[in-house]
Image 1 (tube, rainbow, N blue to C red):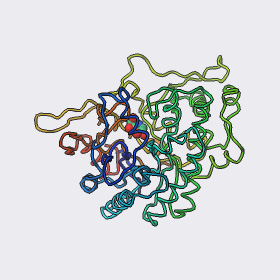
Image 2 (spheres, rainbow, N blue to C red):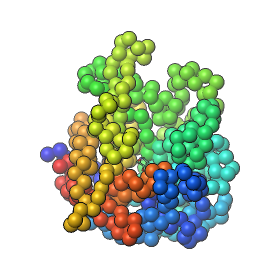
Image 3 (cartoon, helix red, strand yellow):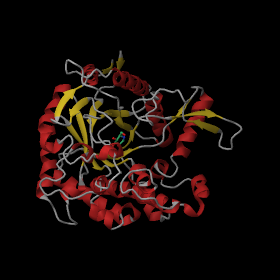
Length: 444
Ligand code: NOJ
């Protein structure tokens, strides 16, 4: 048996813009993602999650479903524009939604894990410069403080921000994420710096407003895996991981941008102050990481850095998206290197895959590919815990099929199928698999 530690947290995750729907309900404000979706050609098939999964209206049903599956923790994010549709103007109904969701989870015995920011920025903040200005970082801290106080101690776990490079670099370098800008390299690095800073301000705000809570990031460090598990290659991969994350995760953990990075970036390097670096590296209780794939590495005495990176062979197995290369060891090395490089305890804040799920004749979704994907990754996570690498929990991405950003509704990441026409939820076979693992506290 591949047994997990006692008190291991088995969770499921979603994010506000992807799962809530209700974007035109009860006074919700416009976010930069909604504005982006409304621009022709931005989103596959022109999809817009105005209703989508509609968790805004169906959250009680979703909580009951999680309870039936035995899920112990739910990770969801807050829509800033739902709570504050205009600057400093509170929407009571928006706030009440999150308070009701937290209460419903607690009543069901499911621990709420709240992500303060998962990419959707109020459009009025975008209009004031969005991630191009550090005012946004500060304002996100204020929002976090307000929300933590409004939960009055009921929420005991917070994630500051989710995947910094995706709402900064990928939104400003032409990679097809909101706000859809294409800026020069210095400006792009600057947005990343502001994202790092936002994490720091939010961590400080949460420490002050929710001193009882544990706090950490849900980031997407680039994960490096040794192709050969020898001491020399593992060592090279660890160094490569630190370097691959120089301008993002490494800066947060170490409080400085590594010299090699600053030299390479030259005049395009982000501008920052010592004070800001202190904010960025505000101590946190854990480091959460989202993991889907990894890059391979070998030791290489010929290269100046002593390692070489490989993305994987042309015929390497992929799940149902072009970037979703199957690298099960990435979860093990993600947790191991975060612990070894920076001494941190981790949560796997997201792991999962899209597959081309279809409803069978009997109304079932037989997603054997996803089951094997999850099993392989979870076994590698169990390997980490068996070696006493501190991993507190795992959140499958996702509870439900939902809005996959620029890819719209086409990719299906859920362990539960969403029928978008009827909003009906249909647990896939992978939900049954995950549920059985949870009940045995082991990877089956
Ligand atoms: C990570 C992001 O946090 C999440 O929003 C997204 O849906 C998944 N990756 C899958 O791409």
